[in-house]
Length: 298
Image 1 (cartoon, rainbow, N blue to C red):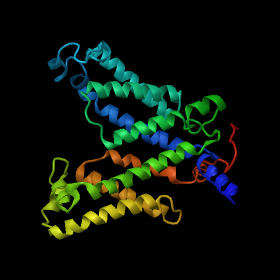
Image 2: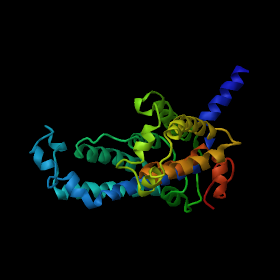
Image 3: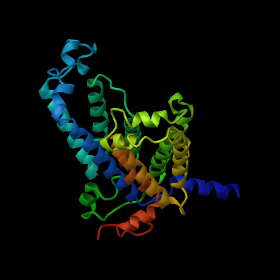
Image 4: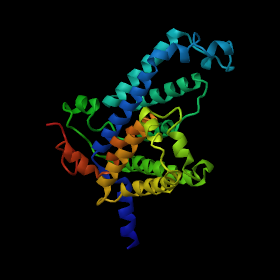
């Protein structure tokens, strides 16, 4: 009995499976990172070079290390171009680990050039994703690597399920962490924070319109425990096959509502990442791949 449970536990974490869910996650998160990087293009020199706003005020050698001093606009352009190349290579599944190391190093370089702006939750999640993708086989399907090696985009090789499980657990922990945080943060003791958020600098015209409805404070108060319970149930629903797709739908509506009300668009990337909670064979079947084993180029 114990041996059978141990084998089932090992299979749940580390079985050999099709990599298509990981490949979709690679394309989704890589495209998101690329959009973030492209958003800095108009302010590239102002934000990261010696001709910018903040860097000249610090003088030369502000970091004590020449490597981390404010670079010239030319150097910033080269670094930025390399970052874009690495991001495109990662999305395409070409030299994935080399591209990921480039994304990691260049991303940290641009972070320290931005005067160590405090990273948001999505940035910390992205760092975890980079580390997991480095040890994954996310380029074993829907990739330029497979096309070059096997002559077709439909080719794939089985990979360990562990990276997919780790990423899914991280997404679950993100929702549960957000719920638990609201239990001890003083600002979430009542619904005042919700009303304040709808009038903050993050708020959209739609949020301002809702505030003008003059909703009773008691309704805002009731919404706080409802949101906490919703986030807990949402995280649990992803693991239950019977309600999984319902959870996906509510999760998508939740993030779309946040984007429309508070202009926080970054968490929309979690929606395509829900694919990580699906059985790998089911995802592979979407692309006409066999349910088990290895698909070769034909």
